[in-house]
Amino acid sequence: MAELMRHPDAMTKVRDEIERVVGVDRLVDEKDLPSLHYLKAVVKEIFRLHPVGAFLIPHVSLEDTYVGGYFVPKGTRALINTYSLGRNPKVWERPDEFVPERFMAESVELNDPEFRIVPFGAGRRGCPGATLGTSMVLLGLATLIQCFEWTPVRPNEELKEAYGLMVLENPLQAYASPRLPSHFYH
Image 1 (cartoon, rainbow, N blue to C red):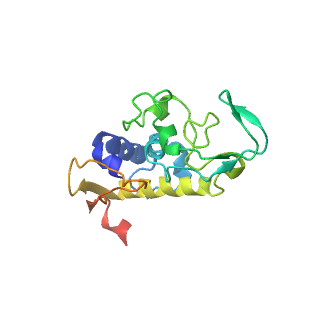
Image 2: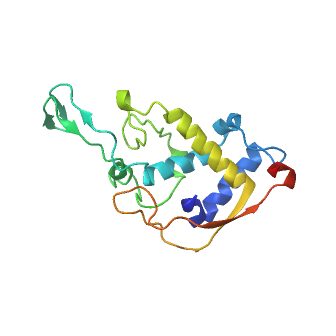
């Protein structure tokens, strides 16, 4: 939500997409999610820039192997830095910028086989609730955007994550004004 308030053009695109797909006579529903392509691109971009945790659960190599030309002996504990993966300039153009359109041009999934973005891990250590979690984030964000007009309390405030944590140093504060007819809120 903080990124969308800092980028009102993206907020408008999401709202327009929701109105085009869902209309104004009903609330967004889970069955609408497959058709909300820009919303999904926004969520992927948010997971890329702001993963839930900087590191995945540690992995241990089961056998001697080579990764990127480096020898990794059996039993080596590996930490996957999802924060750095999402901001790698060799992989992402303008890696520190919020650009949801990058996910419209190319199909990159949240369990990307090329490991460009892995907010929920991958393989046997991947989060078993990733599909449910992603659906709930999409549905929750879509509902907040559909139902309310959002205005930040402190416009143009820099988003700064707390050191070592994937949370904002200063919590987001915003005013929410109802957008839909009153019968939606009862």
